[in-house]
Length: 159
Image 1 (cartoon, rainbow, N blue to C red):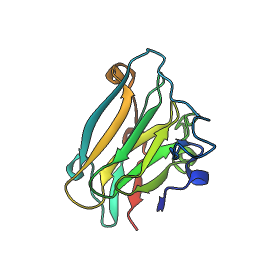
Image 2: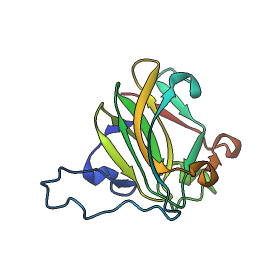
Image 3: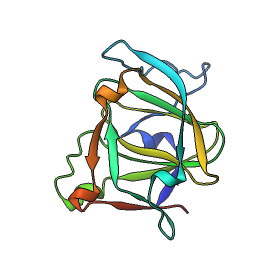
């Protein structure tokens, strides 16, 4: 079941940026082991993932071991699925650790280094456009967990 972003619910996976006037601003920092912080615009479309009657099927997750990543949905509501970095996906119980969050336009988040993630994918419209901060060499550090191949796919219900 998809849930809204909140500081407490998101904490195992990263943090939510705060206003520059918030006393917590700067408490957490992004890290780039390869000193290759990079900003760009990316997009994900509905057609990239299988649709279900109530949403999408998450068949794979990705992670970056050398850097944190920050995302902000720009144009439409989106959904992101995540799992803690320590998850090994060695049995069915590990799939129960996957959480899905609704990301509204202009909401931003930061993924801890190593957090497993999928998406964001658009809830409405054909494509979500995303403001993205991550390592420039992310393709060299983009480990994939094939959930479908392990029989661990999960359905992300959009409600």
